[in-house]
Length: 238
Figure 1: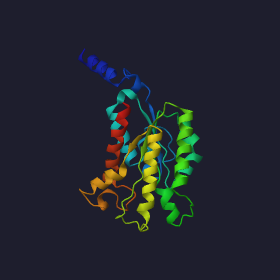
Figure 2 (figure 1 turned 30 degrees about the horizontal axis):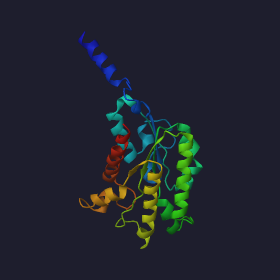
Figure 3 (figure 1 turned 180 degrees about the vertical axis):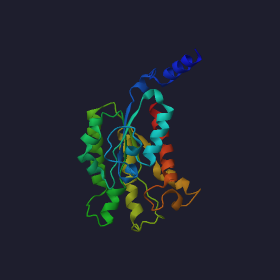
């Protein structure tokens, strides 16, 4: 008798109830971006919620958090970040790697390569205007496909004291990309995650080598900072 009662409780706990209509509209989440999002994921595994497919960075940490917090949503989470990507490369694979997955929430962190690859001998002739146009086109296409999709836009960030040697004029130009990301988020009513501010504040507690040794790619501690901020953003939808 006691055993049956426990089993019944378990079924009630794990079965989706969707009492809140807003929650019932959220099931599939797609993370998009560059190497910071990719973070060692196995690209050969395309199923949702697979630990190796989510990588070892902020995506995996944030996914574990919300899957534990919201079991009733029965979330299906995909990581489709690819190292080195810029916005136009997201565009080239957007149907297959985003829209075809029918996401209810799309999270994008992109921009560091859009600037870096113009100064690091990558022969990319980009600039802030191109970044803005490509980003707007990408989100317009996303909204046209699903007007109800919820968006989370991450601020591209850099810690100049890291081990990667970056040009002296990196920051004045890069700030334009950060401002564009924030502006795009406002235009599309997206939740904006201010990662630069988050990392800058964290530097009061520990040096760059602790949070993002090369100044661009976060450590596990840096990934946890990002995950906590992302989960805070996601909570605005639930």
